[in-house]
Image (cartoon, rainbow, N blue to C red):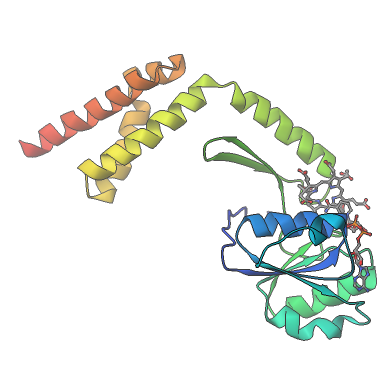
Length: 224
Ligand SMILES: C[C@@]1(CC(=O)O)c2cc3[nH]c(cc4nc(cc5[nH]c(cc(n2)[C@H]1CCC(=O)O)[C@@](C)(CC(=O)O)[C@@H]5CCC(=O)O)C(CC(=O)O)=C4CCC(=O)O)c(CCC(=O)O)c3CC(=O)O
Ligand SMILES: NC(=O)C1=CN([C@@H]2O[C@H](COP(=O)(O)OP(=O)(O)OC[C@H]3O[C@@H](n4cnc5c(N)ncnc54)[C@H](O)[C@@H]3O)[C@@H](O)[C@H]2O)C=CC1
């Protein structure tokens, strides 16, 4: 495995998107939604880009003649996104960005880049799933995501585990200040048979109460 999945909040980071067609527009919107400051350079802009009114989006209309034209813009951005239908431009900019140690997402050839945008879906609340084939076949990645989504959406056990653990985590952080002890107690709760039974049956309140009870017993023991 050469790639590492990371969830990155782009708030305040600078993204340079080369190409403003369908793909360039889609990527620009994705990064804008994560708070990035996005600059798009293209000879043509898709309608969906032109109608965006956002201080964080800058459109530079220009025909790139040679990759070096973009030296300074590449220097000033954190992530470079390649989406033109011109291989000479994409490859040339890739080489410059790579030399400068930039993060590069190449929507036209994933092997000439180091960042992949996966297929992703929020299941509920903050539980998200992302799937990728690393560019080998988006169709299979998308289909896999759909299967995982169907499986998790209807899984009462995972939903109850998520909701009860989320609530329990807030509670335990108030009660026990030492993170090393907290860390151990999460697993105590997870493997508790009564807690597990409630989780499997989707009994949320009972699961939360059981988890709290385990901690109360623990605190009592500590006070002895
Ligand atoms: C490597 C990667 C780029 C990267 O590094 O980020 C890449 C590359 C390529 N995609 C192509 C085609 C399609 N891409 C989509 C859709 C999406 N593709 C996205 C990601 C990625 N696409 C990256 C990892 C993919 C992986 O995980 O393997 C999504 C998730 C995010 C986004 O694009 O914003 C977005 C979801 C949009 C949504 O959810 O709405 C569809 C429609 C569909 O399937 O629904 C098709 C047509 C069907 C097909 O061809 O599969 C082609 C062929 C072009 C050609 O042949 O000319 C290439 C180039 C190549 O293959 O080299
Ligand atoms: N990652 C993905 O999901 C997908 C990737 N692709 C790849 O992305 C490429 C682009 O697809 P679309 O956005 O649909 O194409 P498009 O034709 O809509 O957009 C291409 C953009 O590149 C710009 N451009 C091209 N040469 C330029 C130059 N020299 N200087 C300045 N701007 C230049 C155009 O002005 C336009 O904004 C495709 O060729 C394909 O390889 C295609 C479909 C999906």
